[in-house]
Length: 296
Length: 180
Image (cartoon, rainbow over all chains, first blue to last red; front, side, top):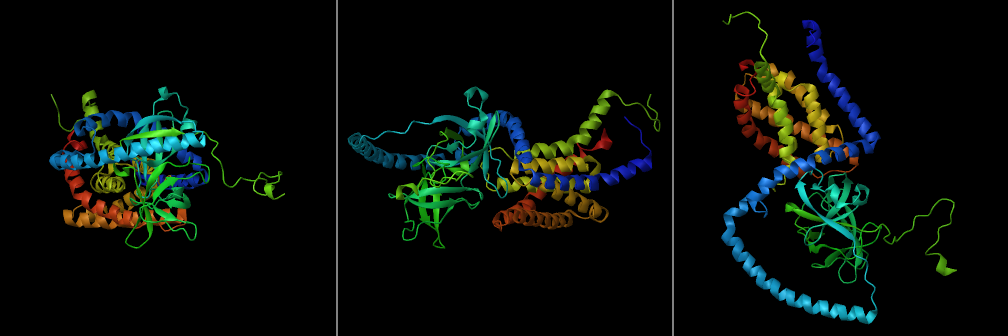
């Protein structure tokens, strides 16, 4: 150990706080100037943490039987009754769904419908709920043995059993961070109802995202199904997101189908990167074509 | 035979004991940040993380400042930013400012009763939570929702007595460097 004189050591201890403060301010400025720095550090940390979280989360999940919070153990009887009632209802829906499926198949065959190729997907456990105060995201553990490169995972669409939960915004070798649809920065183009009338679903940091920019004359109707839309080219069409609901202020919201408060497993769908784009980006030097051409 | 007043070269185990006692507050702070990330489904879990960090920094700066030096506080802040998706370095600055103001008020605050330290922690925590909210609103050029801010202040107020109870025990036991 280095021996320092007492006055020098006192001066050093008095200086650490201001020096660290200046350094942190420098990091803030540097992080603003170079957004990639924060993303790289975060991806590295996530990669380190994901296996550790997986180890810790194992016993907890075993304790919970993989079914939500520990509190579930206390109202088993009530949940049982609820599940039985729900099961009866679901069996009725199953009959309806089978009839509809048969009808759908018949219609498709008479239209010579060409199905879209199924996307690559893999299932990943949610190991940590790493949202901030003004951000909603979860960390999923991916394994390098899935054979999917991290750059392909970036932009993958995360769905739980029922609907879209979010989109992968950062991917490392062993982890991926999914930005949930409730995050403040989430903007997802959606189609509403049977006609698929366009609107934008905007996260509010609360449990239910709101709807903006629907076409005039086609306001979202209560109970309309909200599906993803290809506008902007980030999402494939027709994935279920939620149901339209008007809140107490009479503003349309989306009640998400995915159970965003208690995500356990997510399926990450990697869609090919050639979704149709509504507005082609004109490259400098080349004249913009597409929608003007038919007029000629 | 031990002679009081004479400096002896401490044994390996003694030094290990002393080091672990000095490292207790810092390691507990950093480990706690990770634990709060577990998907436990507790409402307000995201708001609890900064509240926990602020309570740790406040308590240890007040009662055992040598155990939580400024570089550890800066590291805690950066980890908080990386885990919680806030702008990089923001919480490092806020936690260091919290530590600075706690150290400045230390001589008056440390001998006071628990209730007064609790109230002053709530004051400081709400001040720095508001600063963080204002700074992030400025960076995104939009007014961020205030409900999470209120939840964060409530989490600070609620978590401090429980954490302080734990820390006071540690302060007298496993974190007490003078007992090594």
